[in-house]
Length: 317
Image (cartoon, rainbow, N blue to C red; front, side, top):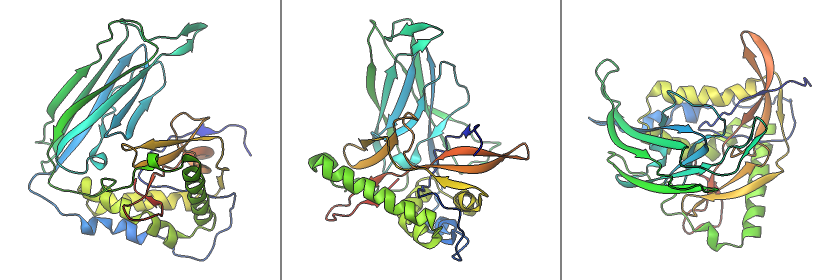
């Protein structure tokens, strides 16, 4: 194995995990159900897409929408043009919560920054555009601008703001899911880990049919909330298939993780301790850069919930 790995953070709308296995089996070779998810999407006269964009100086940060992490930044450099679409975290029209969490930089250039200070800054913009309008004629509608008001040095800063979203769809998502905090947490962790390992077997066996059946509900909801067209669903399908087409595919053991509960206690994930806030489901795949193959870490998102009246975990995001 090459010593040099390229680190890729693929926070994408699909998931995978498994044991080390390069064997190819004679099974379905395309994610046809995922590619067809757009067929269940209803289109409207107005199709609003909501975005968040953030800027910081002197701190790291995380952004949550309705208690689901949508963006994180742990480097001491500014970012530009990184607007993130949040429609898949908006289940219906009405108030939407946005939570900002700021962290000190820690050790930088032999200096240790342990607090967030009044001289540090963070600002956030929330805006919307109508996907129905052409790229030549559309314009962004700014809904809210937020500036963190840091009055004194603190080791951690958190604040929640609310904005109103109007969307033509309504999806169930995790709105009727069970409260996972009410469960025995050790039992819940065992169940979540078992689910991850079962999914690992699906990927190691390259069982496309079972894989897409497990994620189909999520992919349909994501397609509906983002007003997917045929090319959008086909792009997701091809992204999934690329993992299986990789000349080298190694799935790392699912260990050294934290179990994190999101969505106001309705969703659960396993996150890597080594790679902050990234999925504990990690593969090493061969990717091409400038025409040359290189091995890369790929992080596959997998968020679970328990529907009301069910004792079985399912993929929801």
